[in-house]
Amino acid sequence: MKKDLIVALRMTVATLVLTGLAYPLIVTGVAQVLFPWRANGSLVSADGRVVGSELIGQRFKSPAYFQSRPSAAGADGWDAAASSGSNLGPTSRKLRDRVAADVARLRDENPQAAAVVPIELVTTSASGLDPHLSPAAAAWQVPRVAAARGVAVGDVQSLVEARTEPRTFGLLGDPRVNVLLLNLDLDRRFGRPAGKG
Image 1 (tube, rainbow, N blue to C red):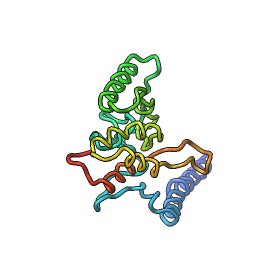
Image 2 (cartoon, rainbow, N blue to C red):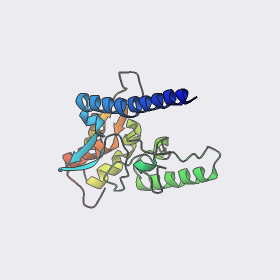
Image 3 (cartoon, rainbow, N blue to C red):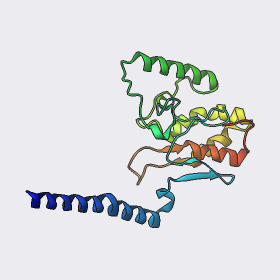
Image 4 (tube, rainbow, N blue to C red):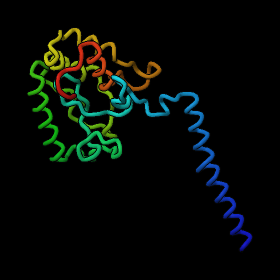
């Protein structure tokens, strides 16, 4: 039995070293060499400071910026350390009340937009941190953003079209717009609005 325990202990240590130390170090090293920007979080900088990650959604409150999907990640949403959905189902009164309140708020904030609010602007993603919107959900917000910045609707719409990413490899997923990158495009083209985003 003592011999079996020694063999088991050796296998445990060997497995720990290979899978717990060597493999992660090798994968991290390869990632740092082949695609360091992605391996380090796809961080986005503006004016010499990091303003977010291309992969993590965040809140934008100002009417001069495109707003992201709602988030259930953390107490106030958009908490990357607490990524999660709300786990509320279609029969949940709490979910229906929140969606109804969000629809009313969005219609009030976007009076020139179409009456039908895109579903993704009132529903959270599974992670609560989705950085993308569909081109239609971004286009729905264009009149508000243009009015808040005092620019032509066509100028803002052209930025949405330029920032629209196609399906991955032409067939995976749907066309999408990264909200953070689109908002940075707005600032580059039209300048930063007064106040915070």
